[in-house]
Image 1 (cartoon, one colour):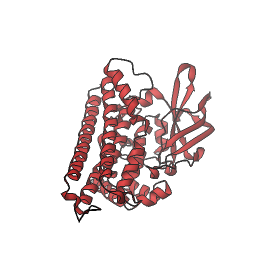
Image 2: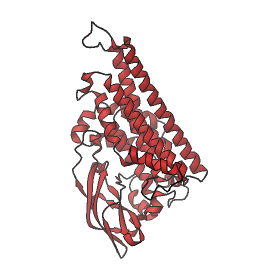
Image 3: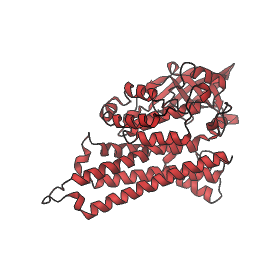
Image 4: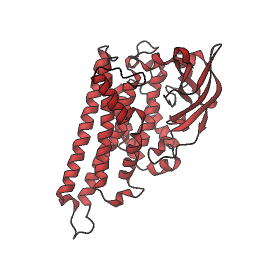
Length: 383
């Protein structure tokens, strides 16, 4: 990555603070944001260097999301996922690499990963039909990655990369939070997908890849997805602490004789508790990323106990971040709920973000509990 990469990221985060209202109205990011992200080499940061990409790490990718969320949670989520999906494309056969990265070092490829649709084996590939939800960034896409069952009898699932001009986008993303991610539904009807645009689910989700000399190929998908996707919530919570701190210094409490909030002990205690939650979330997140790096380097990233801990870490980070923002909002007064106030937007965004299946508290805790007890977590545990 170029020397000014993080300066460009932080500057983009600051600019995004003035664009959030417009992005919410659009229900997608403005084209200028995509252009600026491309100019900053965000989308190509984890593309293999053999195809013109940068030298970004998984930790860099996660930190990108955290730092961008200091400006806008939706921007952080969308730009980071579009960057990360170039890492996913590296798991496909090499002929696809030459196709998607022929003209530039990145593709914009949303990836609704939950399996759906139906596929029929034909000469040279499959014919694919179905619908897939939550295609973040699809309004800017040139490719889409989807997941489908090819042979139910043998539990043969494949991931497929499909050009956007063969995809129908259903405009359904009318939400209370994360509005600017444009996470619409995509549909395919009897679309032919050639063999070089397919990869078995086991190869895609595990530690592997088709490019030699690409160190990120050794990272498994679900732990990376979970820890990267948790980062916008953490960044939003960090920024919310800053906003609440500045507000407390200046705010005069309603229905008092000029009492300032900065002089109110309970308000100071509420702020301190939120600071503690956010610092705990940051420490847990950093430790999990370091543990993931160590496990990959040691060749033990498949270990079930470790994978359960990474899932637990991601869910905990989101939960602590949500709680901190909610508590800060409780003590901030009614005026933070004007539509142009950033604190209510962070609260809406993180409360929406927590609905991602990977952060489902009940399912995460049940899965981690099973692993802790030596029980089989099952094939759908998302570890």
